[in-house]
Picture 1 (cartoon, rainbow, N blue to C red):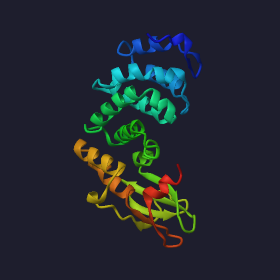
Picture 2: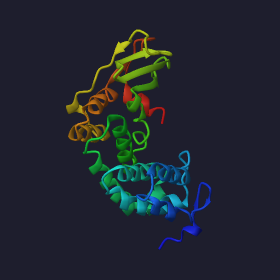
Picture 3: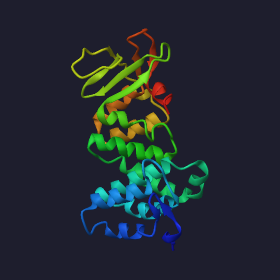
Picture 4: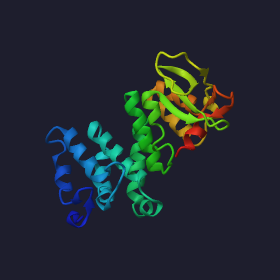
Length: 236
């Protein structure tokens, strides 16, 4: 049995955490999940109670519906903030959550939300860049720097089009240089995992966006061609 009174979260003793988990399913859940997030992963910070919470989160993560998804998202955020030693201490639970997350990303979801499920799977896999850097796919915009001239480059991947533009591009401005998507057959590593999951889940807009994310762009300032994913990774 976990002695929650001996653990800490963002606001002090964690003795209130069991009651929050018990409230799930008995009242509107958004408030409960907000309380859990603010205590267990406050602005990306984690605490002793955060890792103790992985067990009840794993129990919830296998459920269909909003509670299951919320449990996986919170567990992924906690895992993303853990160092290697802490991950090792909780390896069995993280592996259990990892299996649940990978099963989940093979089922449909609204595209914007699906991106966060992909991030969760990457966090539980221990892939640091793509556990946070996929967020740009949710709103269709990414900012990187040219590897040659270091100019800021705006990258549009989504409904706004697939192009790169120099400087402070805003909707309504002329499109810049077209992006070049990676061939799906050439994707490997995390890119392969993410793409295959999106295709299996039928979230084709995200699958397409991933081919551009792992494709190439052009700097409108100096004309240099660059790997978008590599430049995103440079910022993490």
